[in-house]
Length: 229
Image (cartoon, rainbow, N blue to C red; front, side, top):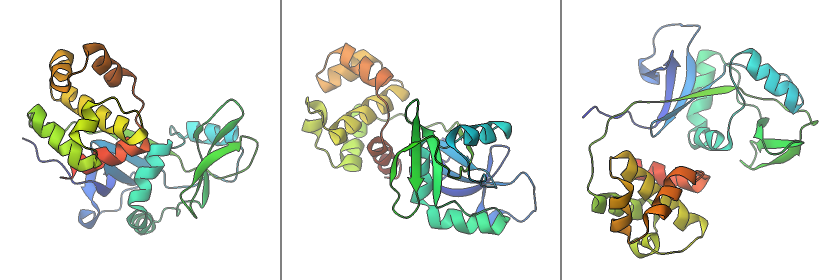
């Protein structure tokens, strides 16, 4: 099995990740990147000037990048101190205190506040910076686990009991844990019927969870804990 890179901050050059301590060259294509599970967020060297949201999105598009998603900003925040040090090492701009994120509605978009980490909807006509990003996924083979082991790891990662994961609870934490179990089992090659039989649920509920669940910040935190056991 291919050894998986630990989560954290790297230097990315053309989707190749280099340990920060191993980076000795001066490459204009070097970017600061944050790895979380098999997902990598790559950060632009520069902040935009202060722009309304529509102009900020045009700024990103003109350099073949985009505004960050909320979950991507949470991933960066996990390693913010190291990200800032690595940006400074490469001579890149520090992260802006306030920045535009993805769209919220037709007339508002998410804005991130670096003081508190709070993200809230703001009118698109307001003026903030944007820090463009891109993202890619690593192809990292894994060793198939038994369903019982996937369940045990999900319980430890989420602090949700097996009974709750198998049950019908619908609060955010329980649903995130259920989704992680189903999606992980599916990615490891188990079909919907086998997963449903293990959970004591119908196949349609497993299929719906796998195909329609929209990962939340809670899900990503549980996924992070799962991967780092």
